[in-house]
Length: 265
Image (cartoon, rainbow, N blue to C red; front, side, top):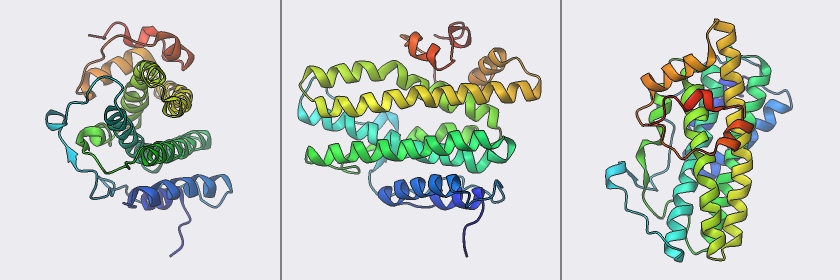
């Protein structure tokens, strides 16, 4: 049966388990939308949990191996593998956002978040290719089991999803990625640093999209954006907002200090 709607196409991506098939499906999803092949209808239920491969083994944060500091190849592989897993799950986060909530927004929202899904698929491909160049691959090491928790905790409300996933989790990437880039550069791994630079530039755009559409929905509902975001973070985010913050990158993405400075630990 042909896939003809946004919701059907999103569900198909989410139910694709193989990482490389999923990234290809995400890119094809974006292409089909841009070519006008999908109706703007979110008419099917999204799965509570996406399909994922048997490897990597998923562990709770308490049982994750401690990554070694320094510039050894083993340490760099572990860091790249962790980043590849984040990008793999990020494909599903973006696709689920479209398929679950896209009907509540104008077409521009779908344009933005399908573009994010395609970016995440490309990021995953770049990181896995780099892992293979270093003699490893995605799935070779254990990975964090909790990355989907934010999606499960915000499956009922688009505003909560935008508050937590792009405006907390992706924004954290803006804080920590520059130091990782310098770490790779410092040990002469220019190839890995270049990939992270590309991811960092795209993350600014992703956080910007999240902040912009969060503000749009707050306006639609008659809410104060800053106060609503702070309330949602306190009630829906299990962790803490911890400095240091990359204030300039966050500001460029529209996520100004008035949002997070007051509630940061």
